[in-house]
Structure formats: structure tokens, C-alpha cells
Length: 300
Image (cartoon, rainbow, N blue to C red; front, top):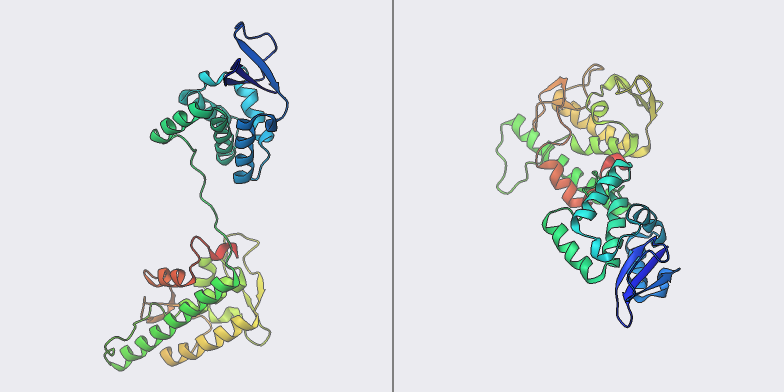
């Protein structure tokens, strides 16, 4: 229960869970507030809180009332807010939940709340840090732009590899590309649900073109090792195209050779797995082309 404690004819403070007659101040009138919508300040703060957080304000005020019950607005200070944050963390409450509760409490404190907010912001204690977000999955547009950029980078890298083998110099203005493997690797990541290490360590013996599936090698877990993954049309097309370039570059494919050979921008040893599927610069260009922000393939 909330109570508005104010002087007659003026605005006063807010008391949480106050008992009738607990204030020995004859000049103060205690008005019970059974609903946040009965007082303009409560209504504005509650509506703003619900709009920003999508949560009903009464729910957020439950813990505030429990821990700060009986406190007047004049007694709410930055140190009280910090102590409240620490107490809620001890109760295993999430940082975002605590931030929501503190924001509503500050709004309910009116003008004093503005001073509290400024002080906490100066001390960098207004909001508790949130854990890193896993990101959002790609939408179809972002995925198409990313694949297009990866495809262009792979084709340019293949041309650069071919010129290097022939001893030719790159024409002025020609793009060197980042990695001849980034496009097929990205197709695997988006369609097969495989971990980075599982993709890097794929060998040709693990691919069954006739029955259209692959067998995962050593995985992070025992259950994941040896599992089979069906290959859709997009993966088959990328594999066939990659195999053509592979044979052109190395002359053949051996069952024990890695799909994505080592050697950096110019792969040179198919018996060694590529060290990274995200070469410096190349992956950044692909991500920027998709305009996906914090999106990650792992959440797809």
C-alpha cells in the first residue's frame, strides 16, 4: 500500500507501507492511495514505467515496498538506492529487474528523484551492468546481404589465388578478397547448426554427396561426436562449387584432406585445417554488409 504524505494544501512525500497514526505530525495529512491512478504523479510515473518496461508498476513496487516500507521521500537518498541495489542482488534478482524497480522509485520521488538520478549517474551507479546479450537472429534480408558479401569476397579471393599460382600481378584496383573459404563456411554455419571447430575440421571423407549428409567428427560433447546432419540444396550447391575450386587449386581431393585448408589468404596445405573461419577484415566486411548489428549466426 502506498501513502501520500503531504501538508494540507500542498504536495508532500510518499510513504510505503505506512501504518495509520505512525506519523506524529499534526500538520501532515495521510491519504491512502489504493491505486496508482488516483494521483497525477503516480499515474504519470506508472504509465511511463509500464510503457518502457512492459511490466505492471505494482509488480515492480512489490520489492520496493518490502525493503523500503515506511520510508518518506526525504529519506530516499543515493546511498539508500545503492543499498537497495545491493540487497536485491543478494536476493539473486536480475540486474534489469533491479534497474526497473529503481527507475520507478526515482520517478515516484518527484523533484528529489531528479537530484538522486543526477547523483547516481555521476557516480555511475544509476543502472547495474547487464550481462552480455546473445544477440538477435538474422532476418531473411540480413542473411541475403551477408551471403552476397561473403560470395563476392570468396570469388575475389579465388581470383587472387589463381593469379598467385600463375605468377601474375593483380590489376590496379582489383580486390584481393579475404578468404576463398568464407562463403561455403558461412553456408555451413547458417544451415547445419555446427560449431566453429566442427566446421574447420571437416574432411572430405565426412561428406556423403550421394546420400546428402555429413558426419560430424570430434565435437564438444560425446553426444555430438559422430552425429549426422542432412545437407539441403543450399549446402550441396556451395559444396560442389567449393570442390571445383579445390580441385583447380590442389589438383584433387583426398578423403583425409580438410575442406577448408590452412595457409591463410592463399591456402597451401590441405592436410592442415584452417586456423580461423573469420580472417581479420573479411568477417567485418561481411557483417557490415548485412547491417545486422549485434546479430550472430549462433542464434539462427
